[in-house]
Image (cartoon, rainbow, N blue to C red; front, side, top):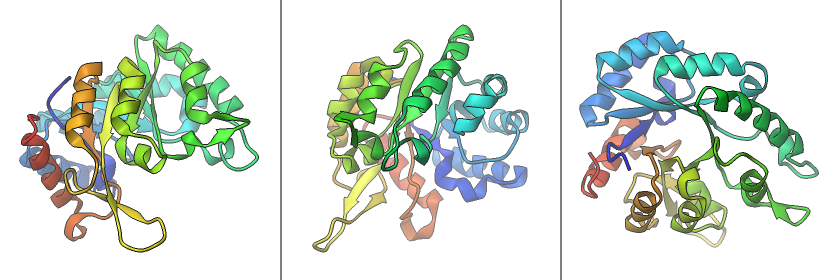
Length: 258
């Protein structure tokens, strides 16, 4: 496992919408200590981002693009990721029309399998980022199980999100071990329960929640996960996503990351 902890730039999505902000963000990320990143949530072109990543010696290892692009613009996705230097092409989520009540993922699986065929010819990989809805059952079978069993294990991989596994009722280390090499990348995101009778929770900096990071990290190392990237969509420390990234980085550095 690459022990360079990464920053999922969706954490700072509001600070990557212009090339000037992207430059300033990359400098802050580098100053914290991060060496790798995931590109996500920005409208910027790959080439202009690559110039800035190189400027700060940051390596992009994966990206997130939308479902429609995988269906209609797969050649552009391939070019985009090759310019960035990534071979793992990620999808942030399955559109709601495939998993909501009364829906099923048949069309999604068919279309993504077609995209995967094209990626495979380029020696590239697809990465599916889970939330919790993949663990709901449709006709007695979870969407998650269908994604595993009805796709090509050589190219269809997962960008596993630890927080959403917990929300979905799964134990993150167990899922990582079940996926094995298909858990190609991980989003490290902590789970913080809150008080009250009703089920409520929030995202937290790594080490500030109740996930067992020693077991998660051990599972990643044992199964050959390539990269781990810190992501925290909301609930930032003092409303500052960069402070949250710094807290998480420092915790993971104490666990042997760099």
